[in-house]
Length: 263
Length: 358
Image (cartoon, rainbow over all chains, first blue to last red; front, side, top):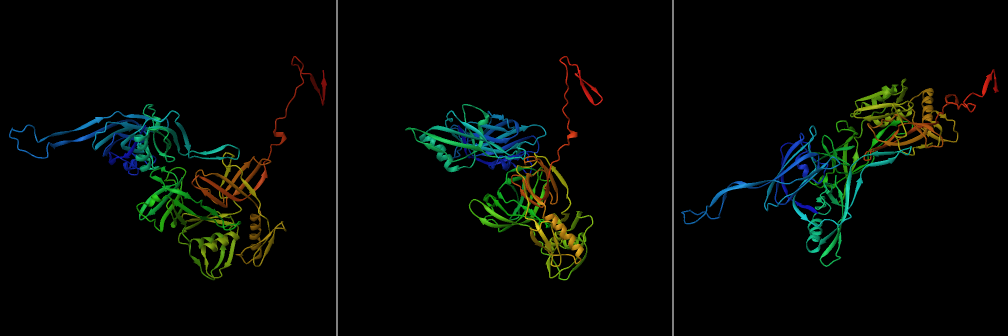
């Protein structure tokens, strides 16, 4: 299981945007308060101070490409002290630096809801890097992205078997005079609850302290399983209640987590 | 969809009870919204005023303008489709009433009509003309629409005693002559309480369970300072109203109308808020098959309670209940029986008015 926290995106831009739905909207916590392109495609550029994953939610894209760019083209000093090379000292004081541009393997799918979720793990460059995300969707439809998160990945053991998944309905339902039902459809979100069995010294406290204690119930980007790559288990969700655990073993502890998708 | 424009420190904020991605994004910053209510001043008419309660907001809305300002300009709208098609319910002022760590509460205030009619102003004209004069004297009202008023507009003969608020005087005169009026935008609409301001028929898929039918204790006598009329319910109560005519016949006609309207059954029905908002005076008809017998019912809208968060509206007004007409026996297909032999031949032969068994 993976959680992106903290989010390390420190700058973001896009090649085109609807003025009422700017790209800055992907950095708020509301999927429906989204970014919209002026057509069915866009290229999002983000500066990230560090991390090894990017996740996008609330999209209507049908294809996606993610590239990471680190390093910088230009002259780089080899040493802090410039010496006059007279042949006695080997090597050069300056050289031509290059950037590393990598097209990453994208884990991407269109959900049955018509929304797409994207999760992309990549090797941590160990330094600040840039993301270049190219998205395209159905012709005639404005491309939309709800939330983008990229940053440090908290990597935990997958949940135990028996993950519970359900739906929470915000719709209005009232009985009509003839016994039929009036139903005003509103947002329906997914809910998950599961138990984790984690190494206490590291993973238990990674989730309890490094995430829950600092982030609270503000939503996070979750990938609930690494072994079962069902895309339906990529979710931008809030903890319905703060997680609780029991220290049943000397080195391992249980944690119960309940999540509700945000809109 | 409830759409609210709130101006905080010169910045327009578009907010709603849930997030709506329309032409603009309407942020989900409204925690609670008291249902606006529209009621006539009396059961027999008058000013049908829209009244608002409180709006409860998410403190995040004021993160960059803390503490929340004492008052803000506010516009409240409703739409079932797009923000361009939204109907405006209120252009007014929100006044801060409570701040705590979980919510900010503002009271909602509609513009107040503070114009007055001077002492000794004399009227002797039709109701339409008199109310046009009074209401268009209010700065926010440009015209009076009389298309749903009584065809033969009754005469008003009255001299004002002491300075009076224009809106109150207009309300009292309209009520005396069995009319209501309401204001939408800069237009006031005058509606005859005895006629329909549009009609709508509901099926049982269109309204919620258990509409209510109630009768108020009847009016026995309606009186003014100088005249009185009685109803056919001598055990009822007495109703006193101000008179706006000097001739007994005119006052009696007005009092008879008041008694008719007051003594009608009161119906209340709750329905989904579909499309545009119902107007006061509209006749809403339905058949209720959940009662002991199928019953036709109608009401003319006098009171509206809008639940803009769950998009429902509760309508109340005087109306009538009647037994649903059943088809006459002739209209039914009577059962027909044939007496046949085993092989299918007819056993009977008609002979004049006799039937012979063969």
